[in-house]
Image (tube, rainbow, N blue to C red):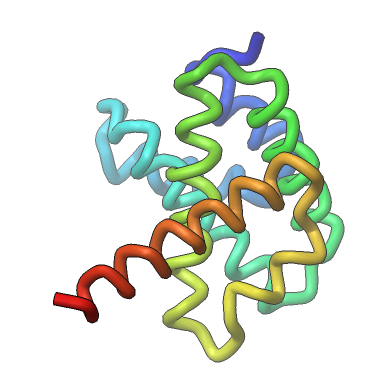
Length: 132
């Protein structure tokens, strides 16, 4: 079982290009824990840049690890993977010149299911609010 304290070291191993950004993030927080969601948000920003710069291998490694988090992670890791990684990526991509759909080809079985569930949740919320 993968635990939450293993997530960032695993991301750094899978995506060594993330290390400089991570070190800046840690320095900004002066060594204090920023929290897993904020840490994953920093990783998502790295992924956005990797996509823009054409680093497909970084994306492939990241999404392979995302799948592992969802399959082999404990319940908190699975939640962080879904909400901290997938949903943050979907939201961040909304503010780029491309859409979040560019990341769909990198998704695997479990991550695609979570991706669709999060999209459906937002669509349902929007529909309910429109019906009011």
